[in-house]
Length: 117
Image 1: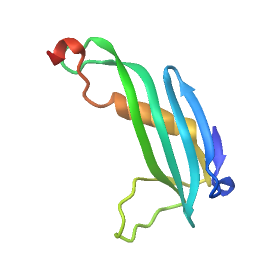
Image 2: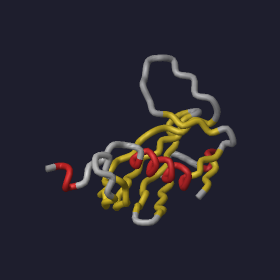
Image 3: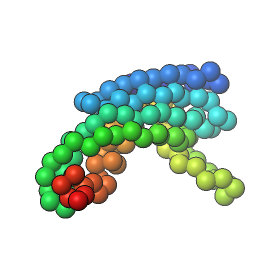
């Protein structure tokens, strides 16, 4: 789902997409001249490997995602600290963001129930 940044206004633009058993639901909203706010929930479950024993298990996912999307290169003046994604074609691909968030969760260290004890 590709959204052109110029179409995003102060009225939140809702979105909801799903990848396997993960739902990514939230909104995009105009923040200021070059920044668009993305606020969403990532919920569901995914299969991942235990970093201790290597067994595959199902991980429950329930995370809030909030960051900004910059139309072009983001220049920070040092007064605020944001998580910013830079867009170089004046659009945002929500499916690509979902895929990136899933891979980020998978890359963390997760333990199965057996190894937690």
